[in-house]
Amino acid sequence: MSAVTLIDLALALLVLGLAAWVLATATVFRAAVGFVAYGLLLALVWVRLGSVDVALTEAALGGGLTGLLLLGAAARVTSGESEAGQPPWALRLLVGLLCAGVTVGLAAVVLLLPEPSPSLASATAASLPATGVGNPVTAVLLAFRAIDTLGESIVLVLALVGLWSLAPDRAWDGRPGSLPKVPPTGALTLLAQLLPPFGILVGIHLLWVGADHPGGKFQGATVLAAMWVLVLIAGLREPPRVTSRPLRWVAVAGSLLFVAIGLGGMGWAEAFLAYPDGLAKPLIIVIEVGLTLSVAAILGLLVAGPPAESTGRAADR
Amino acid sequence: MSAALALYTVITVSLGALFFLAGTLGLLRFPDTLTRLHALTKADNLGLGLVVAGLLPQVSTPLAWVGLIAVWLLALLTGATVGQLLAIKVRRAAPDTDAQAATEAEPRG
Image (cartoon, rainbow over all chains, first blue to last red; front, side, top):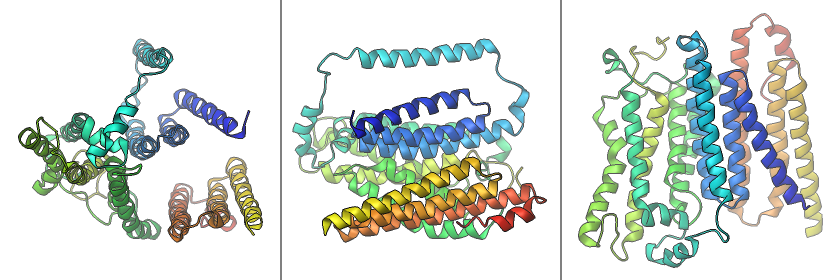
């Protein structure tokens, strides 16, 4: 057994062990922290499988952003209202059975794949030059299966609408209030002032190289959103009011642009979301830039939470 | 020359790994949060620094050097900040244990 196989084996065992620990651990907070580590380990697994695009997404969204949302939820659940007790055992059993069913189903699908497994990789590679982009993942996401990506971007808008609809009526004019309240300290202020220039650069870089190398709008947008959230948590800026028109336009601009270009495809090419010859790459870049801004805004707003009643952030809670 | 550089890389990266190991041991074994933070940030600062220093001769383009050093500097910045924030939280939560703990470990690493 070579050293590389040993490392892979250790990684696989670590992922399985951590997954079991997250399920078994006593408090939600520990489970959320374990889930963040799990996401980072999973990103390493994707790197080992050669899917750097997926690894970047997993690290940014699965580990970072989802972890942050789960930590916020854990803090909320343990801080009061839902401490009434655990759900009834029948419900827990049902949830466990359903989850186990999903796992078994997925395992069956993977194990029952015919040999050699069906693949569209060669077809994708053959059609890649027509799109003008060099990264096959980007070509699939924004040309061959653009409809899926369009759906994803709209789902994000719906998620934001769903989150905002949790706000009580009287809080509607307020600012998002779910971010942790930290007393201002010099260290955090310094970080929130120093890091964003680098983070914004990294975010734009991820977006830009996505055309030809691993990266893309979701990864770039997550980094941008993280920088925004850092500035908000440090208290350097207030989160915007959800009633703000410009904010709402930014949130939907990417999806609108995508739909508009898609509809244009019915005129200048032959189908919805088809790109005219030679213009595929510029149009893809326009869509990616628009989506990056919208996704970054939406992710930041999702972390910031529904509007809360108090006007000042410090006065809340 | 390249053999000497390879040797340098192996030694420096191994030293870095040793610091990570020691930092992890400290994280697991040290008695309170402040000393654990000290162990953790030490591993980040020195361990990662040595790994980066060891890898520098292995990359050829100046841009890759800048990238590696930037990774280290950013880890320093975030590590120091998180250390400070956690330490402040600990002090506010338990002001009595503050005095002796603070003399043992400044969480700057």
